[in-house]
Amino acid sequence: MTTDRSDVDRARSELAATVEAIEYKLNVPKRASESIERLRKENPIALAGIAVGVAVTIRGTVWGIVRLIRR
Image (cartoon, rainbow, N blue to C red):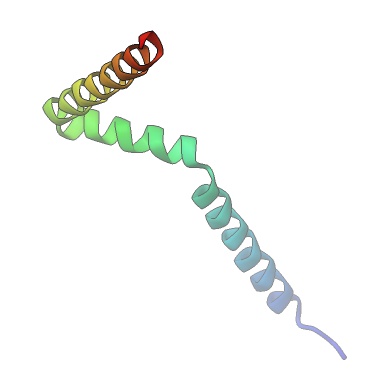
């Protein structure tokens, strides 16, 4: 059985592309930073609103935990 060299090269490039796609999909920190950077460029007010919302949520959670502990 002989395999044409171009078939092997094509299969390798397809495999490499698939591995790169899987690696990108599993690299959540990189994708998150890309999303934040895109949001910062496209809509900085929304990014500020999200940051304020996260800060308020964290503050409320900490406040609730402290209140439960002090009872």
